[in-house]
Length: 304
Image (cartoon, rainbow, N blue to C red; front, top):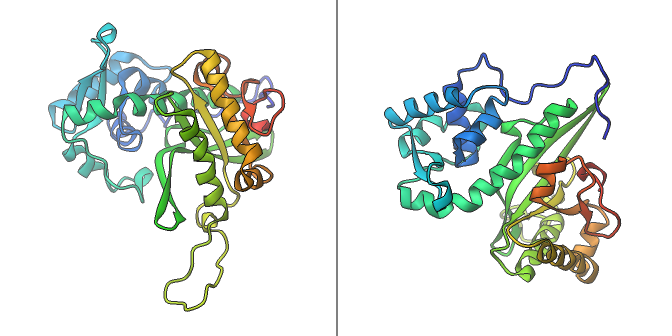
């Protein structure tokens, strides 16, 4: 990936500081479901102060639009997770960044605590891409990462991606628009169940919706063309276990590509890769830390 040359202004990662931070916080929580104060700071005001974001959050809590729950970790008992109340969800449902997204209110701290570990890990996976974009002069901000995107894959089944990412690589006058389905694995499911996710993506790649009311099947082309000009690449971000165990899970993903005919067909058309979350946090997603699921040496995610 090409870095911007000296003297070329970088693209601003976060929303404009001229926009009300209060509105940005509400939008971020509506889109990303939950976040800590630190995550909201990195997302919305990467060069700002924690106190600024904390003041806004506390004001929103006093007016009943957001609430918080402590992280379920005794060693981090002073860290809290913020989320929208039902009133906050109603307030944000018509915001431009949320068009087409259903409201996602959390009705109790118990409900919040059940969703916290996975949701925060998905947010954590987004932040290195946003930081990389700011550093490299590319375009990718808090509204370019949409969690929990569902697509029909036929026979009444749905694929739910942990996130869909939009990212624009800028190299001088050239703009390269990239998209990715992101799967975040905390090693809470079996390796086989993780690898089966690739079959679901292969089904989505081939799925063609049929027009309602026709007696004979009439192809309208792949259903995914309704949302994407090209099929997004599929990225697996792994964490929550030893290096050896995460390596084995990557090998199981590669085995699925090699052995399953539908997945093998997908891999000939779509870039597939896996990495460790801590590696993209340390080296950046543009580092050579992504293992191609078709085999080969680690590389940047844009070069899979």
